[in-house]
Image (cartoon, rainbow, N blue to C red; front, top):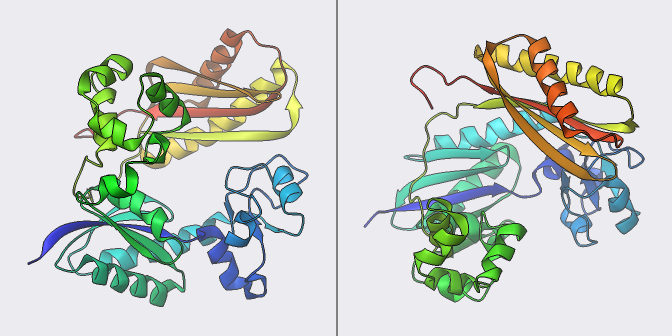
Length: 347
């Protein structure tokens, strides 16, 4: 009898895999995609091949550190249009699967809801369909909730499948640290450890009261559900509507004067407003992100007096937020993000 299952489809080493299609001579070599492919510049790796990962390279690692760990690596620049086109093909293939409900998570991953009496066979059929259309491999986690499907995927990588469900959840996950859960990072894991919850099994068995006391009435119960592998059991294919648009820049040379910061914020604000105009929705809040040298990051937000499409208003607000920090250290990164008014009908 057909049941509802959630499949988490995750493309294997996606950006690298797309690059290898047009550079097959690099197959089997350690490859890193990031920035402009120049390790002398400030940039991080977006994706590393499995060969590079075996040498300690991972996404988010500074390129200069990546080449220290793997001097023989081939570095390639990020090529957004190519990846967007490949992603569109993958998602179209998933949507074409009979009866599939697809919730896109990003370029390279999506939840797929299916009704089937053999979810493993369905996963293999989807893997075959994706490869036939794109020549790209994917791994698929199978679960009875989105959380279980998402976590299952890592056990199946690369090119495999894995099944996590109510009956095997604690057998597979119970002994693992809470940070093995999707949505539980190092900071939350430390806060959980502080109240005696270090493993998934301990979190799953915890009463709600200490979680509410530590994390609040909404987040506490949510974290408890994560420990039990609970949460939503079916994807939502409602088209995604952006709540904000942002731009940021890491500077190759630190900004040392307020005038330099002001000029950079104006440029970022111009680009953000261009994005908002494509949406046809005005800015109502401005967020500022600043990373001071060597690596101290601050974020600030301010609600605007009224809706605006004026980049000068966004830039001036961002600069006021910067001034309020009262910090004269050199600036290595600036980011401006504008929250938009809700669309008609709300989110």
